[in-house]
Image (cartoon, rainbow, N blue to C red):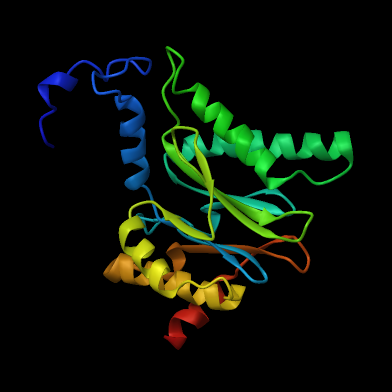
Length: 241
């Protein structure tokens, strides 16, 4: 670990303290936590939105099927995360409650952007309140809105969010981002994007790659419902390569 520059020493003691060059160091540390987290890829396709993630199972005694990396927020919305997954669970629980409250109140499914803004608002509050720490997690939130358009958003520990066509968070971010720049197209089907995502994960994980580590799910524009992709399907794609 590199020694901290003299002018920054002490400015990471509190979340509300700016360094002389205008940085909130605790927030920057939270971003580093995300970059060390397990990889999660999101892609919008012509027929829906897809997530391909690494569950990073490091203990062979763990039952891999019980490890969840993609969560259902509502029928038409899903989320995945990288960083401190216990932090993510709190945000996901909050998003699920908001989605259900919207259905009960308005008798209609919630917009994806409403969920993203609510998550981001809470993250932002934790960057300016004493006694709190930032959420050490980035989330990908994707789904199909009422206008039948696949949407994908990324939120980071600062509380900022962006809409993407395709994106990646976690330890494999640099390598997989390069693959997406070269190979991703908006015209990809969910099936084609799944192959791209699995192959990108395999290149990044190399000898550590294992079908048990892969979690994948999609929401299609046809039925607007979250569908988990089976391990058999993932294995068949791996064998075709």
